[in-house]
Amino acid sequence: MSIEKFIDQRKNLISESISKLAKAFAQESKETKEMLEIYYRYTRGKATIEEIKIADKQFRDLLKSLGIGVFALLPFAPITLPVVFKIAEKLGVDLVPSAFKKKIVEEIEGELEEDVEKSKKT
Image (cartoon, rainbow, N blue to C red):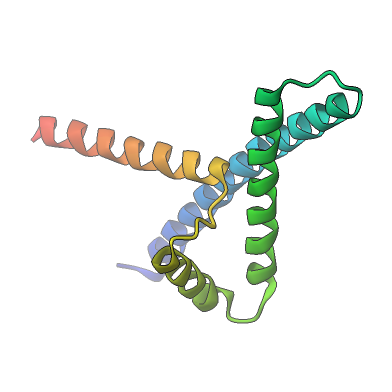
């Protein structure tokens, strides 16, 4: 494999990853805006219990995102983040915000569909 081809593949991989992250952040942003609207209605006595539960869930997601952001800024983040996630998993703590989980599931489903299509052709 030539160096140019290797670099092009990495550029594509990075570009796709950035695009997926942007979509996940956009979804988180939308959900956070809805959360703030619900809390505002709550201060006016116009939010339902169910809406408050949804807003609280989003607030937890927001805290998870902020926590991940702190670790991402630390030196050696490519090493520290997987370690932190592994420790959290062993302790039964969920650190991944829901919007990111949705993107991961969509990505896996897309890859599975591609694999099925490839296997049908062979």
